[in-house]
Length: 326
Image (cartoon, rainbow, N blue to C red):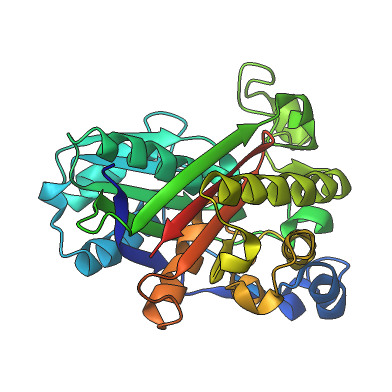
């Protein structure tokens, strides 16, 4: 069977950093409170005028360079985001234009799982044999969608973008072994941006109630995420005749250190096998997995033929996992 390989990775984070201590001057919180509950010490915040597509393009260029691929060679661009430049058109078309690509481009709205969903779609396209180079990006500028007076949410998120260039594998033993996607719409209300759509269209009342900002029931998200992610990783490994003992690296969505540790505990995987950067980035939603993957590739921790498990969960609830032989 034709396999898909990740040929290049790239990441980008804005220069401005907001620390916990700086946040504690704005709202009633502290570095200790945030760190012990989330593992986050700081997060990157986009500069005024910086757009989601700008961050996506910066990450994409690094991935294209690693993959030795020109933008003109791309067959498809997929951007996972819930915070695009505009509600319409897709963020991906702005990325396409800024890169100078001439391929089809579309967005995937799967919140924090956006890059995993994009990876799965790209894998399916490449396996048809008709696509040779696909760019998958996770990019989020959530700092402009937060209620900065709500310490339950504003301390969690940061801005960033991560990218992957995918293509056919020359080695049938290496590449994406499988991807697995799930959704459970009955839990949708525990993590939402309720305003701005057909349910709560733009109005003075909608703005006054801050329905255009992130609303989250953190306790319910926590409970659901640990169970769902542990189950999907177990299923993904079993589908390939593997177990947790075979995993060299876990590339987790950096949502909350307690969620990551809870999942690893259920899987009986040592914490040392997870690549973590939540302390420096916070939750960057769909950018989280590709940014983390890029760090592991560039610092040499991820090596040829190692087994990786990638996992993420976001609003929907929507979650996914991927097993990759690097």
